[in-house]
Image (cartoon, rainbow, N blue to C red; front, top):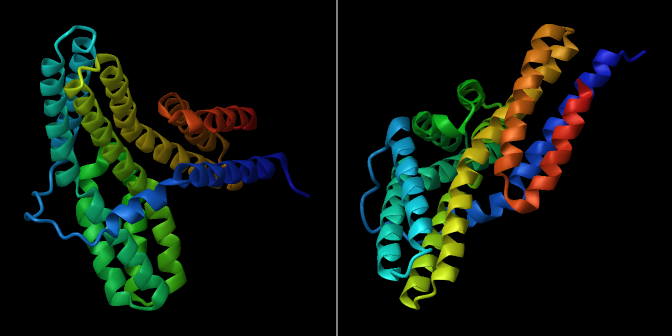
Length: 285
């Protein structure tokens, strides 16, 4: 007979699976297309940045966008454009030095290798991804990336294709690289549209694009919050299955806090489903 604790664990596992499906819906295609671009970079890749450097560039971009939003209420489109250029410069540094596109390529190569039996390619992809991931600590679940990265590497080195693919699922859930890549590019695209609006002296249209860029940057934090929520809910379901109720409650509450934060930052199309997931998760405990 299934106990109430086991039912809770099952519901939490299903909730985490639904969140993962939601977080990746429509995002993988965007990033995969970008990562598969045949155009080779015209300059050598930027040095891999630290987590603190990435955080600093994002904060400077946010500050510039806040200034641009204020300036757009005035009558000097040239000043707004210059401020937007500053925001774009900071985001360009973030995008280049975070190596998000390279990370997406590494994930794709590692997954293709493990699925097709080319374990040398899988190992190379995993190793490259593990070199990049520490810099993205603000947007990932560090514990899960380390555990899943080690598991994927071991599985690839021992020729365990299914085990490697399973570890890749956990690794990609911990970092959501496609979401991060898509949001960074959305922000820069909105800034470009905003600067075009300034050329036309369309301050109202430019202000709307500034807000769109700000929402896209918020999406970076959204991806991190959603990753942490997924991880905590999964751990909570495992602890419930083991009847470790106090530890499970702690993990579920952490997961729900991050889910609440993710819902606040989510794109409008995903906000309602996340609100519903939060409500269902709150009912579980």
